[in-house]
Image 1 (tube, rainbow, N blue to C red):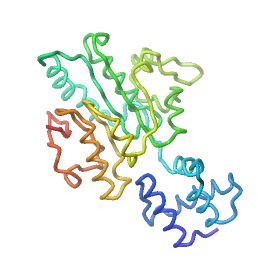
Image 2: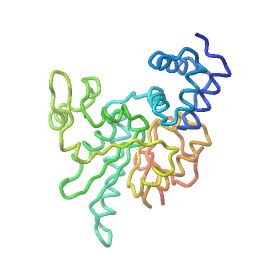
Image 3: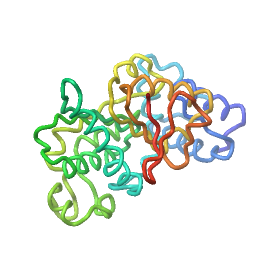
Image 4: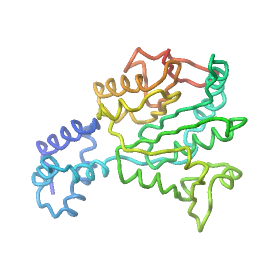
Length: 277
């Protein structure tokens, strides 16, 4: 079945309006496949019929399921470890020292893993913090993982992963923080207690306003999926979500200089990050 150009544009613009993700012409084949997968499930015969279904469904259930099907959830534990080492060894100690020296010392850390997919990133951050903090029980650590996909968030909450997901986890940490059962790796309660998950659409201003006072935000390999105008809106809201002195980490394909001048680029040893002054 051919997806007519005018139908592709309608779907593309609706997706962009609802969640900010933009499908270029070269990804038309991917969008077509996702549409037709859902058409089979909903017993819809024509592309135009399915478009009307997701656009005018008063509850928006099918639209949410459709958007779930579009998001890429490729991730694994300890991904891009060079940057994570920089965070835990170079940037985190600066924040810990600042909190200890405050007039009223605050042993609390808030971290946001935005577009966290299946949860490997926020759980990785939890492992790194548990290992780095000299007395982890003295600190209140709150890690928030958010994603637009309700389906993938259930995977996060279940906390059960495959051998491939944990392939880069050092053996000692794998034994310490996972329970292995027939090749399925279940996250320990220690980590589950400090990582909480919730559904969030970057274009939902009310939800974004609820995300406040974070010491660190990880928004890696996410902004590339949006148009320039949406990127600027998202980054502006992420800026508001950080406390003064907080840091944001982007993916290697992202460049803050083309989006916002509000952050100060800092290179700490070999780690590049962006600070809210």
